[in-house]
Figure 1 (tube, rainbow, N blue to C red):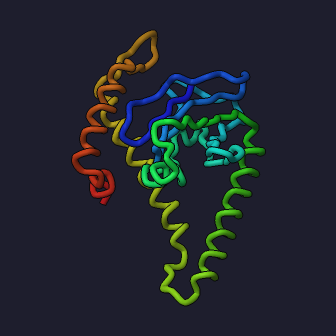
Figure 2 (cartoon, rainbow, N blue to C red):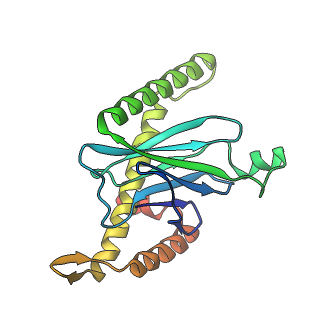
Figure 3 (tube, one colour):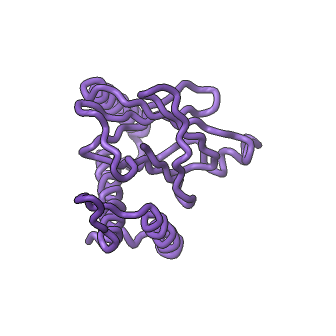
Length: 204
């Protein structure tokens, strides 16, 4: 139903079902960015969306964002699980981090996202006030969010353009074999390793 990609690693589809509307992946740090997406042919029930949470060590689940039928994938930045932080804490290779996904009514999801956005804006404002003597680039958070959405769109477009060459008509439905998705991922991962800025340059 859902897939997950931690930057620089293969696709994870080993989803654990907690309940009919709750699911989880187990991730192994270090982590910086991850992508959560609906698998091909997966459609969420009408009027619902899927919230995505992560549980950092010693903390409750934290909302990262959401995906929906209209936005079937999203890139999330994860803080506090980078290699340097884990090395300083002496826990590299020993942690496992739960990533939770909850299918909820879209109204509930929108409310949670609004709360998340307000909290982020307040945090940014506090940071700016605390650095009033420094040169602070006002509005950087909004630009970063736009840049993340732009990057997510470019990844989806790259995948779509590749997979359309393998579309087959089966029983009146256009389908693509999963092996072609895996082939795209291997090529995409290799190219990102060679040039991690190619997506944004191609969009210009």
